[in-house]
Length: 419
Image 1: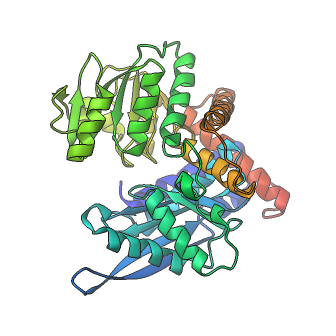
Image 2: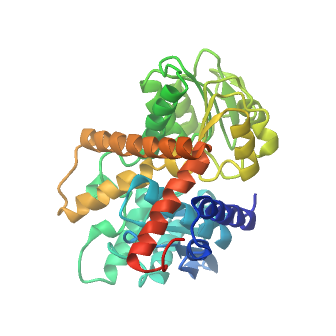
């Protein structure tokens, strides 16, 4: 699925939810496109002295409940349409979790893994310079995403502070704890998925202890989830990433695999398991399948091969609309991305609150306890909505989110009535 198709599918999601709720087409018109998307050209001096330009975007969707919030990714396949679709999804995600934010997303077209660190730093700083009037702790609060991390957030924060007289570090989240970050942020998305999988297993009467799990993607999200769910007693039997895949019916040694990945930058070649492809991973007879890589991985054809009882989406948009329909028709419980992977933005919210409290440090146990509470409350709200309307969890999540956004718009006078 390319960026244009991704945006169209996301807009269709909004339209279906608005129609199902019986709301005015004006609600759809307000939610179908971001409020604004800024394009930034970033000039960078390369190691050989030549000048290269990198194109970036920041899209802000709907600040109904508070400032815009969403990550920034550095990836060679970033497109404007993709960023806009992801901004819309962030509005839905923040709405489901009850966070006081609107949706935003950013991206720069580059491959940071192939670039020297000084070049990546120039890209990060140039991106912020281009957005300086859009960002702020009460305007738009970026965070890490694909190929960005606390180091990149530190560069961005420093560049932002150069143009402001007030030293407010809460304008960026996902920072290191040394400069105002929060304990547990790096593991938050994966841990949040583990909490969701635990609740989904209860719905399907599956004991999490001993439950078998397959994961596509072993980056920050996939690895964090694997470690968290294994600590809860589940057995991770298969993992794939961009380099290949590994499978062991007895369960993978996650620590050894992590060490291998740090040394080789991928799971391929790990000696403690058999090789496996993505197609084979999706078709494994496991209890839980977690796609935690890129969007558009499970289409209708792939969905026909899935044998897991539960699919919990760790990535953004890993299942196409047709794929989601097939999963639902086959009785597979699909927990959508806007619920399953919301742990990252939820703990980013905690970090923002921590910053607003003058840097009062939250201990990691408090962060985990609050994250558990937020994720369970959201899961139960979405489950209740899906049961009330007789729809899938994906559709239930969309209905719950759009209903809250629509009511907020009506209360603020953005639309004159909902019907």
